[in-house]
Length: 125
Ligand SMILES: [Zn+2]
Image (cartoon, rainbow, N blue to C red):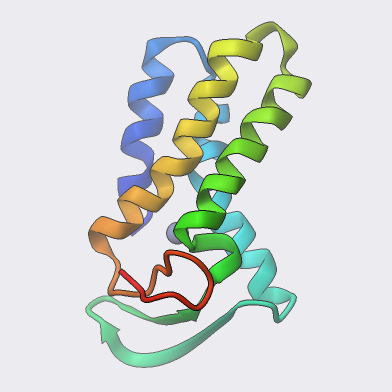
């Protein structure tokens, strides 16, 4: 589940314009948000035995961390924060960081059950 997210991080990290640890943070940022929002009770997850093969997590409500629209917003916001914090890597680093954040949604789309909303209560893909 998580391993697939690191492939884009390793590829971009090898390119050398962004540090590997930064790439790892970028590809997991949406899941960090998901964990925090679940702990805060904003997003909802339930455990159903055998729900999705090896995973028992039913991710039935996660519009703030994993909808397509919010993933784009998270990616842009993360790129802006990256540019402000890491000024020496600002241009290409921020673009790569933002793209890596968004790569999380793409890699989730490949393996998740249809639980990724396009925008809040929209149909899920
Ligand atoms: Zn995810």
